Amino acid sequence: MKSWLKKSFSLGLAMLICSVAILGCTNANNGKNNDPSTSASPGAGSQNNASGEGKPEEVTLKLLVAWQGLSFLAPSDLANNPVAQIIKEKTGVTLDVEWITIPEIERLNLLFATNNMPDMVMAPYWGGQDVHTVAIKKAAREGLIMPLNELIEKYGSNMKDAFNVGVASDFRENDLEDVSFNGERYLLPMHTPLSPEDTTQWAYNVFVRKDILEALDVKPSDIRHSEDLYPLLKQIKDGNFTDTAGRPVIPSGAWQNGWNYGSMLNSFTENNFTAFTKIDEQYRLGIFSELTDKRVLFMRKLVTEGLFDPEAFRQNDTVAKEKMATGRVAVVSAHYPHMNTVLSQSLYVDHPEMEYVPVGPIADANGDNTMVESKVLKGQSGVPGMFIGADSKNAEAAMRYLNFINSEEGKLLVYLGVEGEHWTKDAAGQPKHTEKFLESVKSDPSYAVNQGIGSVYTLGVYGLPNRMFQAAGDAAQVDELYETSKEVYGLTVVDGYRLSYFNNEYPEFDKIQTLLDSNTQRDVIESAYFAASDEKALQILNDYRSQLIKGGVQDYETFMNEKAKTRDDIIH
Image 1 (cartoon, helix red, strand yellow):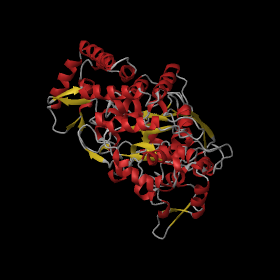
Image 2 (cartoon, rainbow, N blue to C red):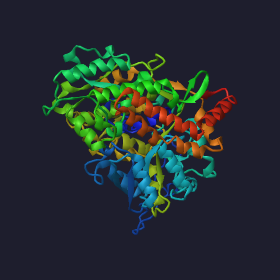
Image 3 (cartoon, helix red, strand yellow):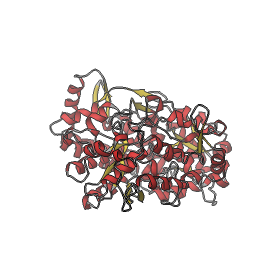
Image 4 (cartoon, rainbow, N blue to C red):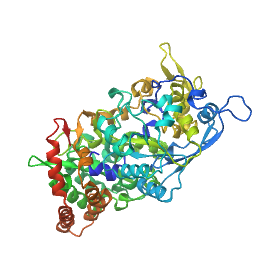
């Protein structure tokens, strides 16, 4: 947990999008594993089929991808692309995938309420009081999720390091191995880096249509504070700019469910790792900071003056992509791989002049060139994760599948494709895309995914040596705009124990957790954006703060300050 903005609005679509194995933007790997054998070996849980030939039993696994915006990872033919065919040959598994277009927590709540569980579920697991994490932990304790220890021991030789590689120690201790799990593990971490040097730079930025910046004679580096966006948005509104269909542009907006308009407010946040900030040398909940007032009043100004799309806060993935595909939103925030992957297959095909470029860096409230997503812990502090439904009849097949895609052979397959066809090894034994592959991707941006490369089959992979596989593409094909976008905010790596993990020791935390519900806080914040005046907006905030105080948050803050004195490595 870094801030309520990340919790409520980003929803961490990061971690996944870069898995599309296209040129220099890819996270692909041949990570080390404990067992170099393929999952067709007995130790990996193979089963004989009826013919007795030693081939794995053919099974169709139902996978729920509880993550908005990831449907672009679906190959046009899920079962018959080259990657899927090899996976079926090695493991017997064919995937049957459900994609969502509603908020992740809504789909998870429905899933657990009805107990209509598929074989596997991929979902956000950010740790701490993140609503997805809370829901998944509760489901695990209630027996709705299958424990993994015995399954990994029997069938998961390639996954035994998954809980250690690239995972922050406090996250592992408090979330992956929550004390209430009694030594069991229920969720397999995904897309963690093999080493700190392999941490992916997602390049979260505020992006603006290049043709509009040029028409207004505004340089990207001119935008250095969130307040600098206001005159730019005013100029855009008054500039008679249109989208590809001739409709007036929306000055600014967001992707699905408001993701990630918080980047526009960077100058009004300290980019902390938890919901706490420091006020007068005491740890206080960030909702009590005057920075919250500034964020709300600035955003209210944008909304009331027609400079931000009011639908964007709760729009679904389909609606968001429809707007972006025509260049209708002039200013938007996200990470670069998502922007490029979606728009290179839509807007940029016929309108490359409308390419979105990063502006800034927009300094944070401390004057530093950091953004909430550019400050990372040593090891992932939250992950996308995979779990298995407790009643699944195909748990062994699920493990057979996961074990294979986490083998050296499997990782090469799902991230680079078929050896000899999509990639080869150079003289030093390093993987390189074939010329045919590069030419195919250049002529058809969806080629890789439709071949099964960097697609849904990467969901469930951990320990990514990104540096090695970024070199798989032809050096001449490096995405220069991605490199530029990375440079706007370099990664800041921080090591320590997050203050929020003392929540586990607070006697009445269940009560406080309900009081601090992130969805409730989001409703309060967003309702203030639509208030009739600044005074009424601040009154909405102060009424909420009064409710928190009456509910006992001051005692909670006192407890956290006392606990913080017991360690010298606290970060907040």
